[in-house]
Length: 189
Image (cartoon, rainbow, N blue to C red):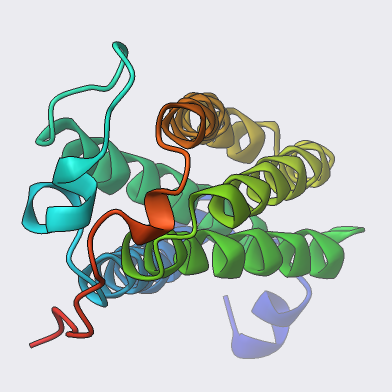
């Protein structure tokens, strides 16, 4: 087949798969890197004296669960985004990508707000906004690629759970902001 003959043909399944993989190889590590960087801007979990001193709800998982779950979720949502970015020409693609970016930027702001600034109440509002934007993003993704929407579902479930944890910590720790003076150091290397 000559170059002129190939111009008007549809890409093969193999070519489409490789195109998606190229996007995934860039997007998934980027999402992981940004998530990791956000988590390292301030001490979190057991590295944070303020958080350790808080009264936690009964349903609070052990500390090791959070990095494991967030790593898995960032991979899944990165793959979902790669599917949407790969869907060139799809109606609503730009809006879906914009919605994803908006919810992800809010997601990245939660850790510094909660663990760094000790703003438990405002962090709860942020997580509610993340959840709402993520639901809208998932609906937008479903109109483009059903598989991308399915990849977002574990994230929605975890955000809901994290919201409940944030809400209960807020209830159990009135005045949490003043519990322990904040460390003004970054965990970035």
